[in-house]
Length: 173
Image (tube, rainbow, N blue to C red; front, side, top):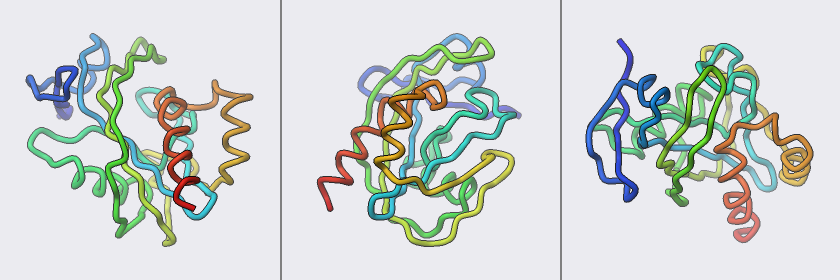
């Protein structure tokens, strides 16, 4: 059965639920999250599995998903991070949130209130092939240059929130 997403207003207040694919087709504003992991001046990025329902083959952050109705954001972020990358345990900090709209492939849309989490991680990682084709640590300067010269290789939400996350990483060095 298709999971439901949490529909929200522009202040992230829940206003109902809807099957995930319906929310991505219509489009409806719904709650999501993005997790970024870093080590010194490297960021963990994933190339989304080619068979994903949208943005397959594009580069993105360590993981992203939607909390289930009744599930706390922090718990869902940790669960999905473990399921997609094998990273555990990780102390995640809520970094910021933003709303964005993007037209995607396959006639779908992203209209999300995206909560961004950040964590420093030095453990093992292992890509879940159902979700991820490649996981790799990338030097932030190289990543920034690649995002500038080849933005079409990246998921739209990543291009929006990665610079702000990277700025925080550099400020904390």
